[in-house]
Amino acid sequence: MSGLLALLDDVAAIAKVAASSVDDVVGQAVKASSKAAGAVIDDAAVTPKYVQGFSAARELPIVWKIARGSLFNKLVLLLPVALLLAAFAPGLISPLLMLGGGYLCFEGAEKIWHVLSPAHHDVEEQVQKKTHGEIGLEEQKVSGAIKTDFILSAEIMTITLSALPPELDFWIEAGALAVAGVLITLVVYGAVAVIVKADDLGLLMASSGRLGLTRWLGRMIVRGMPFLLKLLTIVGTAAMIWVGGSIIVHGLHDLGWHWPYEAIHHVAVAAAAGVSAGWQSAVEWLVTAALDGVVGLACGAVIVTVWSGLRDLFPGRGGATH
Image 1 (cartoon, helix red, strand yellow):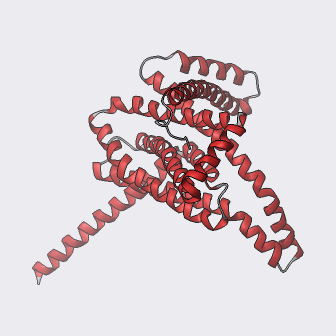
Image 2 (cartoon, one colour; image 1 turned 90 degrees about the vertical axis):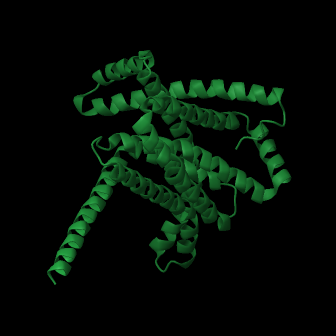
C-alpha cells in the first residue's frame, strides 16, 4: 500500500511539473507574440487582396487554404530552422531575413507597378485565366499568398524567438514558438475571414433586419466594404515595403554597415525634437517607418527591374508573377 501511495505521489509531482511547463509555454508564447504585433498586422492587411475577384463561395475556402499553408510554414518549415539557427548558427539569421526582406520589397514594388500599368496587368491576368481557368488562377493566388506569408511568418517567428528569455529550456522554447505560431495564425486568418465575409453579413442585415437601424447598418457595411478592401490593399502593399525595408536596414546594421540605420535614426530623432514631448515617440516611429519604406521601395524597384529584364531575356522561364 505504501508503494502505491509513493507511486501516486510521484505521479502527482510529475503532473505538477508538466502543468507548470504548460503554463510556462503558454505564458512565454503570449508574451513573445505581443512583440511581433507589427508583423502580425502586416500579415492581416496583406491577405484579403488574394481573395478579390473570386466568387463569394470561394472566399472562405481560399482563406482556409492560405491559413493551412501558414501553419505549415510556421510549424513544419520555420520552427525547426529557427531553433537550429538559434542553437548552432545565429550569425545566419540576419542574412536570411534580409533575403526575405528583399522578397517583400519586390512584392510591394511589383504591386505598385501593376497599378501604374494596369493594362499590362489586366492582359496578364486574362491570359492566366484563359490558360489555367479560374481554378488554376485560384491556385496561383493561394501559392503567391503562402509564399508571401512565409516571409512574414519568418519575421514573426524570428521576432518571437528573440523575445523569449535565452535561459529557457529547449522544449519550452520550442513549445512557446509553436503555440505563438498557432495563436498568431488563428488571429490573423480569423480576422481575414471576418473581413472578407462582412459584405455577406451586411447583405443579410440589409435584407432581413427587423429594425430600421439594423437594415441601415447592413447597407453601410455593403457600401463600405469595397473601400475597406481597397484600403487594406494599400495598407498591405505599404506594409510589405515598410517591413522589407526595415528588415534590410536592420540586417545591414547587424552585419556592420551602420550608415543607413544611423542616418534614418538621426533624421527621425531630429524630426521628433521639433514637436511637443507627447508626440515625439509617435513622430520618431512614423519618420523611421517612412524612411524604411523609401529604402524598401528603392530596393524593390531595383529587383523588379532586374527581374523584368531577366523575363524579357528568357521568356517562358520566369512565368507569370502572382
